[in-house]
Image (cartoon, rainbow, N blue to C red; front, side, top):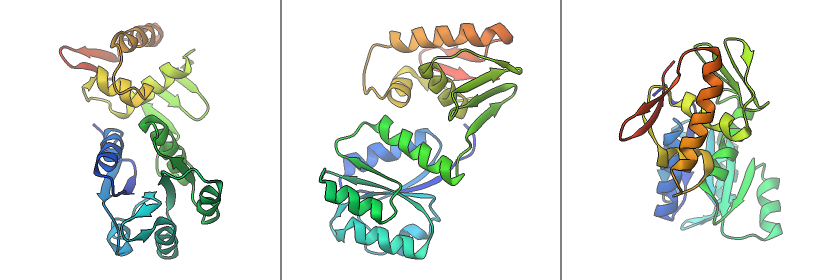
Length: 222
């Protein structure tokens, strides 16, 4: 699986929400640590996080106040989570210097897209993925193999980038549906059709890169 690509702390008192976010982060190779609450900001800052995903309403008090304390002690990015959709709350978070603000309930894929965007701006994760002679630039929607540009759809590009991040790892169709499409459950044919189309485009410039792992799913192996 490759080395971790960024450090994230998740401060969220709802355990199912916290666990789902942590699982999604770790699936994308982030180093992720969760807290139910954070009465001592030093506990999180000791991890030297690049990003804090922070619930606005916490048992020990207001998440905005906690964000202010964290920012006073360390430069880090912040994404707020809240069940409140009031404009005043969004403005308060953004005026504190938050990088983004997401209202519950939200799709994990949307959160992950925002996490990737925030950490790319910080330089904590690469904007361009290179594995062997395969290159993907997600920001500019560009992919090339052996120096030749590939005409990929946006979904194919996301799928290829996810496979490349997890090169050498067997990924299930359910994992791909969740992380690439944002579906908790759906027809596996959706994955199979896109893998087939992606393979055809990749294999015009070289041998197979995406291999079928029987009983599991697929693995990217250059």
